[in-house]
Length: 141
Picture 1 (cartoon, rainbow, N blue to C red):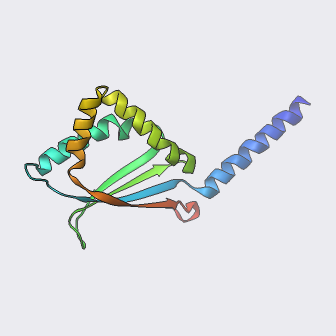
Picture 2: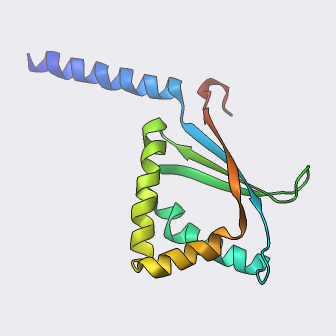
Picture 3: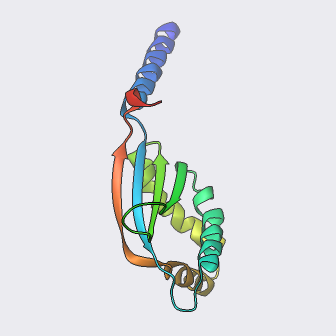
């Protein structure tokens, strides 16, 4: 009986891993538009972004990987593209509550937290695009 249970468990684990491999990770691609507000600078934007990144993005355990891109060639020099990888859709959905917790830990004083995000967000226009993709693992290199 124990051997049967162990065998069933092993089959379940193998099938679960196969399903994950076939499904692939979830990638969220976001495009933001940057601005340099009056009295602001690219150096201040980068400093604020670095602070946010160190205190939040790097500490979010739901994120598998993350890449930030700035415009190089193309239509709009204001583009800031972020590609974030998650193990699955559930981790992507849970990531926002993790971000909320991390923000409260990083800036425990609500007034200082609000002031940081006011300064930080003034470097990005109000909207952004969100696209969610599933990785096609059989075509990876």
